[in-house]
Length: 442
Image 1 (cartoon, rainbow, N blue to C red):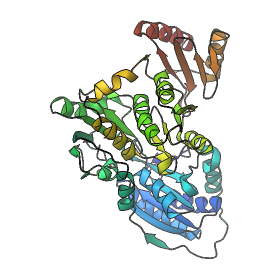
Image 2 (image 1 turned 120 degrees about the vertical axis):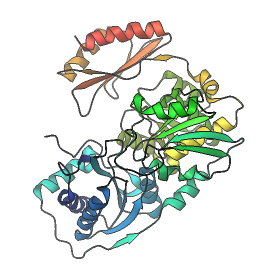
Image 3 (image 1 turned 135 degrees about the vertical axis):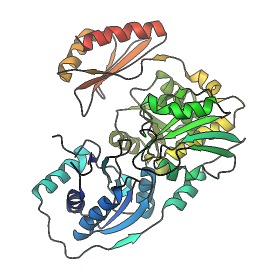
Image 4 (image 1 turned 45 degrees about the horizontal axis):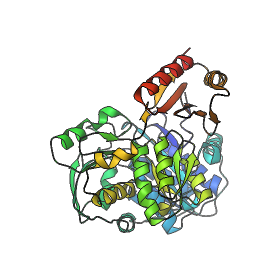
């Protein structure tokens, strides 16, 4: 059985691999590992989030930490609370976009710095497995704090809407309903909601914008109505997907390029990160608007660290995460949505037209191949393309040529190789894609 202690969070199936007894141990181990005095805890709308919270809080307090219950909040709100309230640490109880039977914990130190597998999750696992904790001189106290009004006010301060926009939002019964408080009632935005009842069993569709089939309801609404923009939040609202007025999904790298323009108008010359699977158009747009484009590896813990080191104002990841210095170098899906709305409201053109100058290349999309030995496959590709292009080994293997590039990475969790490729023409993209897949799957 694979461990519930993952590369980026702790995640398991409630009643099978995760229960109250384990949540209580995780609480104790978290305090034993960090030595924290105050822990903020938020949670999602899954039916088992409440009992797991009670058990986790009991473990945290037993180990001597005071617990601040944030209640039902989006993941970006817990990051904001961590930074603004000056806590030692925070935990978000959620399994994000996973189906309803899953749950888990996203862990942070002070200033919303994430704790990943390499920076503490594996240590916490060892403490839990040993089930031995240093004695605590006192039991912690429980208090409550409503962070939603402060978050809404802060993110709304970035609104700059020049004309009214009609926006369809698929909340997917998740925490986008809470995150979306920023947008609801904002002057200039007329919101038409889909699935806006909190329900952790996700009765309408999985809350995962990466799965194309889950966009159907939003596409139907947009194509049968008259909308400027479509938004789609994932389960814990740390990701947001975008759809244009024609019902076409706008990929996250294109949105990164769009938001970069808005960020650079406010922060001239700033550093902006894009993940290495992004279109060449992203770094080109950042440069054209006077910014410093910087390539990041995949994964929120890496991106947040790189942003802090470079004092970057913004980063976008192909999976739909958008990171802002203004939210302690963490995600704010509402802020990403607001920046796109700002930009759209300053133009008299629809989103599909605004995107046209950025759509300069043809991308393959991410293609997964199941392989037995990921390292052997990567070496095969290194040998095949040696001396033929510019090699980058920031995350897997990237090779850049004059008119196309590719990246291959091994999955963190499965025996998969992920291929992303882009070329100037559709024919060239298909030709290089097929050649690479033949090598990968040989």
